[in-house]
Length: 157
Ligand code: FES
Image 1 (tube, rainbow, N blue to C red):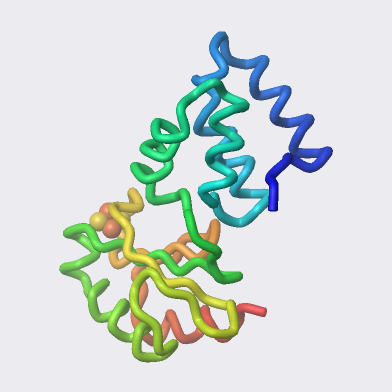
Image 2 (spheres, helix red, strand yellow; image 1 turned 90 degrees about the vertical axis):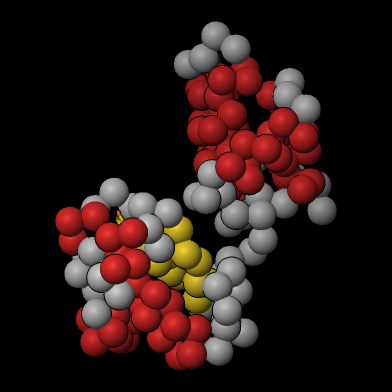
């Protein structure tokens, strides 16, 4: 299936290109835009975007693989990102990951069969003083315990 921006995203794409003197400089916001539309960045999407930005597909793939916020596989409705860096690790993040793997019968990087949850371990989320931190889609949850996580997950539609 070929990739193209939908009308709204196409407008935003054109507006983004105007903000940069060089198309290639718009790579990060354009990748975000494509991921927002499609949910993830397939090889085909990356190749199409590379053509639009006058970048080689390999170079754009390097950018995608460098940043943990970009996803190259379909992900669940809810992306559970557990910080694995030192403060969170010491405060129990590893136990939260074990708990989620056991609860959902998935490993880190996998999505539940119903397509609802994808579990990832990520680097510092920038809130080390309130460790352990879990980000669910765009929302941060701080000082997360198993009990708190249970309550949060139960409230998700
Ligand atoms: S170490 Fe987890 S938010 Fe910084």
